[in-house]
Length: 511
Image (cartoon, rainbow, N blue to C red; front, side, top):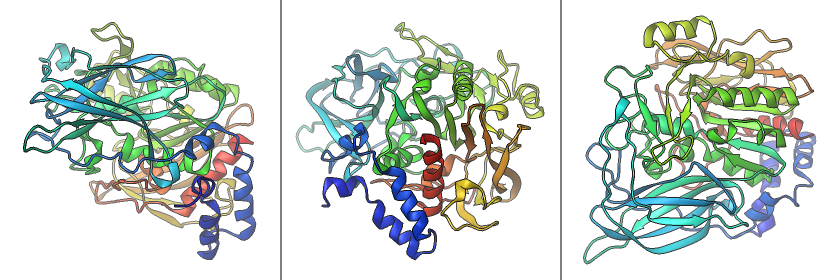
């Protein structure tokens, strides 16, 4: 093992390799190293010097015949996010009844291991808890007995936390495992605020038996289905068409689509804090950051989130949409049966104001109770129809500052980086520039245009739109990571150009 200092900053080896490959000049490499200099005092660097866990992944995973849930051991948390000093409840079901070990890990870099063990709770008594009957609008809302209560210690740094549930075998049997997931948030001033796309995780969650926003008998795109955070996450909902990842049972969509960005940010030593979609209903948290990141598949936003991020832009916060299909559907929150706020969501209507694609969604899938504003005026690019497919991320403006040090030329392509959903239709915003663009192939054969954009904010800040769910795939490959594929296209994994573009954006945002 390398020393903690070297583990936290394996930058020089990467930069020298990039120089040798012709991707970076030596001058650009020096500038890249300087961009992270001086970060040794931040809490992320100190946290990632701690010893990482050798065993945090799921080893033995089993789902039932429908392919969505793991009734042998499964669980959920009482809140999407929690602060130090606050309590979170964890609800566990096992069938048959078994003792359960709960190990809680903070996800990060940790010298390349990807996680650190924070706490172990042995001897939880798991019993078979009831599968809820469908409620109005096919709502499946568990009302399980609490299995564990945990007050978050004051020294637990903001991050995404996975709780690994492991059954304790009886007699001649083996164990089974799944995750629960929650976010620890804070209110400190921070360089980078990482918003997890957990509304979208829940919208697609098909637990217990194909019940999601997309699976109501009245149609897959209407306002017909309610979904609750008071239920386990099943296996990643599109495991047969996007990412076949056995790690996903119980963890939403964090591991395949968001963890590569978190892993890379912490590897590079950026001062980053984490939040859920529901933490952005007011702009207060975001106004304490220099850069706000939307990551992966960030499709479902309450309108209050939209207004919060507008306010952050207007106050000078830099916005980075390292995501695709973002801000597509209005997703109002309401409280659950427990009285906890923000526990039930549904597809309330399209974003897009009076743009044709929003009007068509209302015509084809409505009526909806809500119509969101034009997301293009915030992000720079819009959702389009069709919105899915795969393609290469093709450079359109190589002399732009985001490409400094990459060595790219016009028409160069990052293979497979577009997908499985994306943005197009640039908005009419003064100063907006299309920095990349090309064709995505829906179904592998039907062409659709996408565009990546950047435009200035009102206070010297910027708004960047990478226009793809897969951007994080170009940054890192954490332990256990499985690359996605969809519509006969796949990203290739870490790419020095994607890494350098992201570093350039952050260097400008934090300067």
